[in-house]
Length: 211
Image (cartoon, rainbow, N blue to C red; front, top):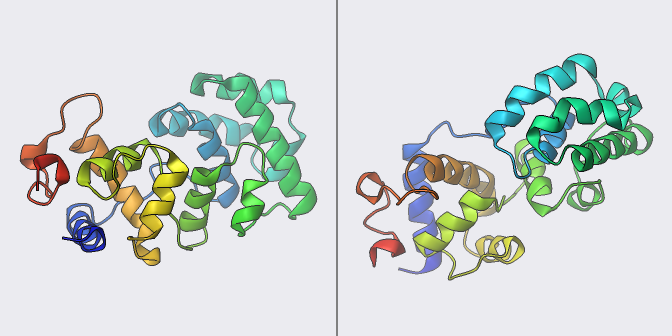
């Protein structure tokens, strides 16, 4: 089976297994996803979801957060780790949205990459979830799973994994596919324990099983 055919089969099976899979960061506005995805670096989405309501209660919009002192943002987001650098990036990012984009999150990938603290993974997440555009989010789940499944061969660098997946994943499937990998990676194809291959919907086609 070619990698492209394997990818299509995996996509179909994961759709059936996780029909409602979506972003695990809670947000209702684009700028809030931008904040949350920065806080999620080296932190769980669950913890970020616990912390951000307090931040948004005090700073309910882009202008309020742009005007906030970095130290005050840091005090709230510290439980997410790397508090100072994250607070600094969030503050700078909100100022740019206020001053250059009328308070809106840009829908251009390259413009997103220019924002403080935004890399390719974050930009892809926003492009896919907020704007419904083709996106592949190479987080730790994605990188681990696509290597185990045999969609990529021993590639660990996020940028190279993303490039390899663009060649075999239909553009319109990329964003949802990556969300489903998160669910599958947490529940079945786990990182900190042996993967639960016996209950995996992909066990008969997964490279890990020698197929």
